[in-house]
Length: 441
Ligand code: NAD
Image 1 (tube, rainbow, N blue to C red):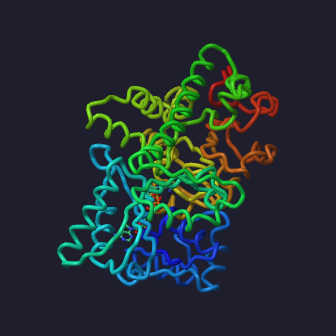
Image 2: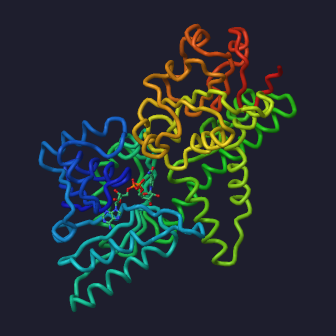
C-alpha cells in the first residue's frame, strides 16, 4: 500500500512516520518548502520524544519520503490523509481553508481510486465539503474517477505521540462505503494486533467524536480548577480531594489535576469550534461555555497570587519562569498559559527570565526579546524575587532547593502545577503558593 499524508506538522509527521514504521510506503507532503528541505536533511520541524529516530530509520529504509509535490504523490496513493491545520477563525469556528485547498488539489490530480481521509480536526459536515470540492475539481477536468471520503480523527497527545499512534486506545473511522472500510481496515491492521480496537461508524459521528473527546477532557480540567479554587477559599486541600474522588472508578484518576488552565493547539480551539457549531445550528453548549470561562479565569490565577503577594508592586521585580511550552515533553507554545502570565507580568513592569528544556527556540520565536532566556533552570533564578513554575517538566520536580535558596533574592515560589509539597517547602524556608491549597502567611 502507498499513502500520502498532506500537512507535515505534529499530526502529519507522526502519522506518516508511524505508517512507514509498519512497512507502508509513505510520502509526507507540505506546502512549506523549507520544512521539506530540512526534513530531507534529517532536521525535524518539531520536538517529539522518539520521533527523530523513527523518521531516520524509515527514511533510510526507503519507505518514508518528504516532498512538496502533491500531484505526484496523490497519483500513486491508495489513501490520502489531509492533516493540515484547522485554526480558529475570527468567530471561533474551525477555519477550513487549508483543508479545502488540499481537497481541491487532490481533485485536480487524482487519477485512480483513492480514499481521501480527513485527519485534521474538522466539524461535522466537513467530509461532505471535501467530497464536493474534489468532485468539482474533477468535473472541471472532465474526469470521472471514483474516490471515497472518510474521517479518521487523531487522538495523539503531543509528548507521547508515537506511543499513542502505535498503541492507540482506539482508532475511530467514519466511512460511507464498504470499499473505503476495507481499505482503512487493511491500512490499520498492523496497529490492531495487540487488541487495540478500531471503531467504524458513519462520517458525521466520527467527526463529532473528536470534538466530544477534547471537550470532555477540557471539561475535566475546568471542573477540577473550579473545585481547586473553592478548596482554597474553604480551607480544603485539593490534592486530598483529587485522591478522594479519583479512587471512584466512575471518575478515575486521570486528568483531574488542577493547574493554570488548559492551552495548546487543540483544547481551546476545539471547545470554541464546538460551541460555534452548536450555536450555528440553534443549540447552546451551556457546559462548554462555562468550561471556557473557567479556563480564561484560571490563566490569571497564578498572576493574581503574585500581585497579592507583592502588594500590587511588580515594577522592576525579577521573576524566573520555569516551563514555557503549554505542557511537558513538547516544544509547542500555541496558547501556552506561560504567554498569558508573561504578558501580565511585563505589563506591570516586571522583568522576566524564562527557561524551558526544549521550547526555548519556539519561545524566542514567539516572545522575542521581551524576556531574557536562561541556559539552565538555575541561571533563571539569579537575583529573582520569585520563581513561577508554569510547566511541570520532570526536571523541575526535585531540584536542589539549597542551590535555589542561595541564588534567589527572595525565597518565594508560585507553583502553578502543584509539583511540590507545601509543608516541605515551608520547612525549607520558602514562601510557597500553589493551586487549590491555602498556604497562609
Ligand atoms: P501544524 O500546524 O503543526 O501542521 C500543519 C501543517 O500543514 C504545516 O506544516 C503546514 O505548512 C501544512 N500545510 C498547510 N497548508 C497546506 C497545504 N495546502 N498543502 C500542504 N501542507 C499544508 O498542525 P497540527 O498540530 O499537526 O494539527 C493538524 C490538525 O490535526 C489540526 O486540525 C489539529 O486540530 C489536529 N490535531 C492536532 C493534534 C496535536 O496534538 N497537534 C492532535 C490531534 C489532532
